[in-house]
Image 1 (cartoon, rainbow, N blue to C red):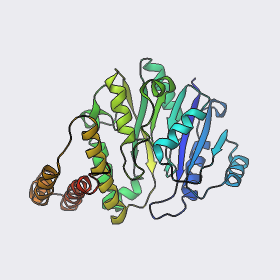
Image 2: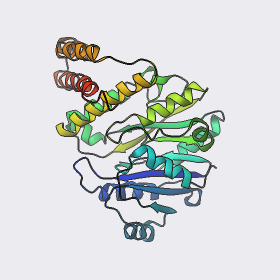
Image 3: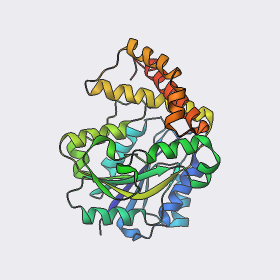
Image 4: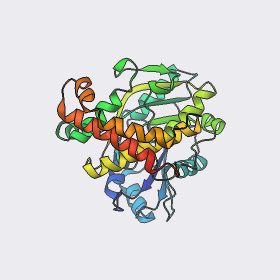
Length: 305
């Protein structure tokens, strides 16, 4: 059985609020792992959160975790935070999750099993989805779930090996890398601004470029956040900026005039989206808004991405 270093970056919420209770839920789910406790450590890297050492002292006393806290008063962002965790890790297999996620009890066991059956794999990971009870009631959560499930190879929630960009939804809330892989490709790109997502996809792209092999496993981590219109709006802006940054970095730069044309076209695309979403009007409406906001995000963050 492999030894894992689980890395979590603790940050504030989008409204600058504390996420301490979410972090505690995340750590509680790690304490429920069926994987032997002595075979994994947990490293929490602070990124301007309000969490302090006494919180972790109390958590350790309750859950008896092999837990290390690295304080930092400023918002250093997820890429830099994860890289600090990698440098502080003791073991050869690194696993990432987020402070607002909870993992299933067999999470580490499934990752270990996949590495055992795919010895050439550079990375193993699964999906990060909204909790099912939230998806049933909230259209923004339902949209996110449907979007992420659409990334799966052949649209099926089953194990597969991937060496292509779009066959595996690499989300930092549910992904593991061999440490030697991270050292080989340079870990996360710390030049990503804190307001732009996509540093995890960028890492995968660099790994694929040098022959990396990824294994998707049907293990689902639950993402607990406020699925509100406000969060949706800023999330889509960030995704637009992330897409633009990716295209710039890989020689596919979009020009402002082209982006402006796409914004205009996206406003006219509702009938087509309505048809392709099988006449599910609520989902089509959210998909339409997502397309518009993402394109606006490309223009808004054009100089910063």
